[in-house]
Length: 256
Ligand SMILES: [Zn+2]
Ligand SMILES: [Zn+2]
Image (cartoon, rainbow, N blue to C red; front, top):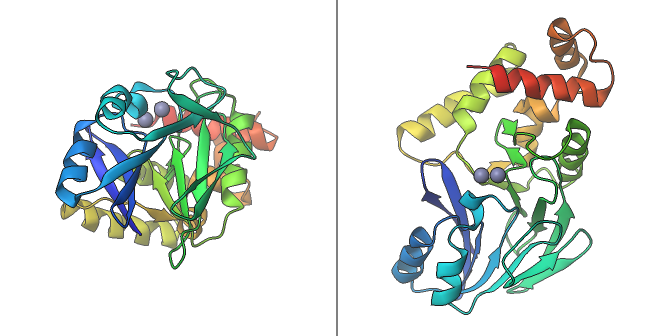
């Protein structure tokens, strides 16, 4: 099985997984990069997974529906085209022998879902849309900080070897912020050096690994005493976990 990020727009990735001539894609915001990859690699698209309703994740659906016989799955709790089969936490989608578990991960949008599966002979794969980014997390457009913290906790329960397939190449700007939060975190400094070199070669920084994210991503580390203390320096009233997380997210929103 092969996992490939297809670049789309300025910083999106449409994840493509293929096996024996069959392909699945995740969040095709645009159809053309997918159609080009199918032609180049001689693949038949038979499954599309959607994480949330934003146009940069769904914009290619109608063209791909017209061009292929792919089944489309997406979040039950968001408005989707009628061709989308609704999914919610506890359900799963099986593709080429891999069971992709569905999780509800509200925060970025209110009905956002994520998919986690373990193909044989491969590290597990997490398609997390705009919930978890390398070094960061999605903006809270429809959900609360408490919901997002809970959603990220769910994702962190997966094995550290999990390949984190985020929908955007935001890594370098996220890591710049992360260094403000944790200037002495050596794993973070090393990861930034690694990602700078990848980007200089025009390569994606993704997938990341979950165990790396746990060491470098401030939004997965907001309960660590020194991270909490740094946040509370600027927001002394942030006491509980959700309030600290909210203050950290607010800090990132304002960070240039
Ligand atoms: Zn989004
Ligand atoms: Zn997006």
